[in-house]
Amino acid sequence: MKFGFVRLISFTAMWLCIVNNVSAQAFRQLTVNDFKGIPVTNQSTVAYTNCSISFQYEAHRERNFYLLDFNIQLTLNDCKSWIDKKRITSDQMLTEVLKHEQGHYLIAYMEQQELLRTVSKTIFYANYQSAAQNIFNRIDAKYKQLNMDYDADTQHMQNRTQQQSWDAYFKKRLTYMPPQ
Image 1: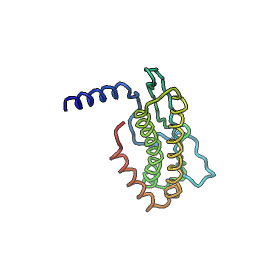
Image 2 (image 1 turned 120 degrees about the vertical axis):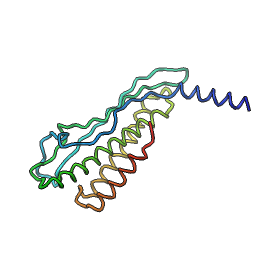
Image 3 (image 1 turned 90 degrees about the vertical axis):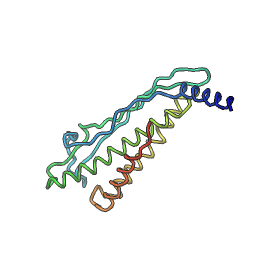
Image 4 (image 1 turned 135 degrees about the horizontal axis):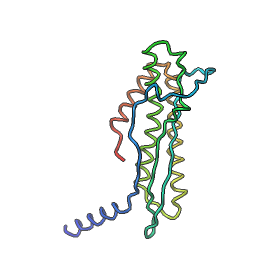
């Protein structure tokens, strides 16, 4: 029993030593002030949210593996995000548009959080550059598809039943999002 306990403590201490460091910012609610871009008026959409995720790290060699300190930032590009205010006919419509666009931001936030969780659990070896890039590419593709599915299912928020379904999904994901 004592030997098993010592092994457990040794394993835990070793795991804590090889965990990668990650940093990010908190989730936030969008407001009309986040949309400073010039609307594209020849589209069927009333608004557009542009987010980007920057993925940087520093590698430090340890024995036969690498520790990577990650900085994965989610940025709402407010100068590329826009709302066509001429097509907003009421405060209720503006609220619905903001709620739909919040969904796009939340998808980007979920991507960032999954990236952070994944890289913090990964042990990197000599091929750490391609391994890190593969993680990013795989998770990015997953959330690009989710973003397209969101707009297709909700018909850019026109299908209110589907929008409500997605709103419930987003609420659940935010409530039960695993820690980093």
